[in-house]
Amino acid sequence: MLSWVVTFLVIALIAGVLGFGGIAGASIEIAKAIFFIAIILFLVTAVVGLARGRTRV
Image (cartoon, rainbow, N blue to C red; front, side, top):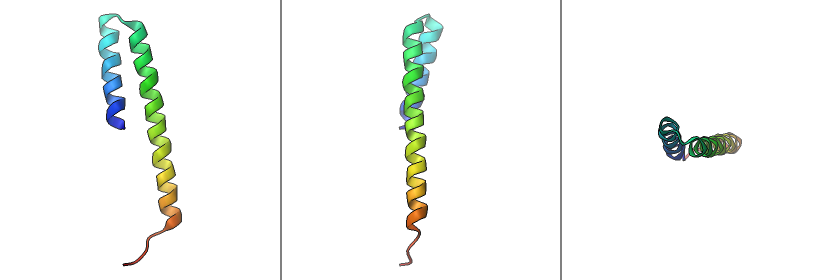
């Protein structure tokens, strides 16, 4: 998921350099949304992992 963020950031940088402001802005917004979704999923799995605890084999 974070590779998608990097991809959209690279697209935004290239579009910004070439003067395509609309595409650059849209790519940045998509990258931000995916980044925050990834952070939320990480926090949820961390909390669930801590709540379940570790079991001994």
